Amino acid sequence: MNNIIISPSILSADFSNLERDIKKVEEAGADWIHVDVMDGHFVPNITIGAPVVKSIRKVTKMPLDVHLMIENPENYIKDFVNAGSDIITIHYEAVKNVKDIIDQIKVFGIKAGVSIKPKTQVEVLEDFISDLDLILIMTVEPGFGGQKFMEDCLPKISEIKNLLEEYNLTKTVIEVDGGIDNKTGKLAIKAGANALVAGSYIYNSSDIKAAITCLR
Image (cartoon, rainbow, N blue to C red):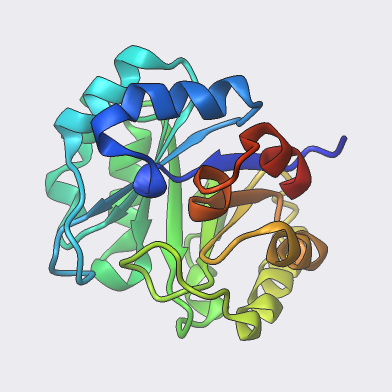
């Protein structure tokens, strides 16, 4: 078994049975829980906020991998930290000073990540790459689950892997999110990813444990 981190996205869970669905993936061998926070402004969808993260924290000890797809995330970092987030990832495209917000997250002693959308170039990460614990590459346009994986994003994964090796940043996680299944997950891993976010592929599976094992 390799060391690929599997982070199921609760965007595809049944929100009326969220505790049950979190327990399902926990018992099936997932590593993290991926929480997509959307504000209806940065992306064309609205999901959940810090109060739901706080509720999730009560029912699992798994690391909460919180992905803020929101404008002005600096106004909400403390709320999500207090709610129990272990990793907070912001979007490069949503902020003016990425480094300041990374520092703001790290003050609380948790991990900081930056996500880039499909059309954003890898070079934008260079100014602050040494400060990151995680880089999240979106392989769909963020906003909705169940979209098709964009294979033209694969070279970006390899670029980031090479960049991390160049800076000797061996502990930085390369996470990929969007259209991940047993086939596209293999492509992402081959390109250099070591963490996969999957929602519909896991939660729509008749055998969640087998789906998670297959992704690895």
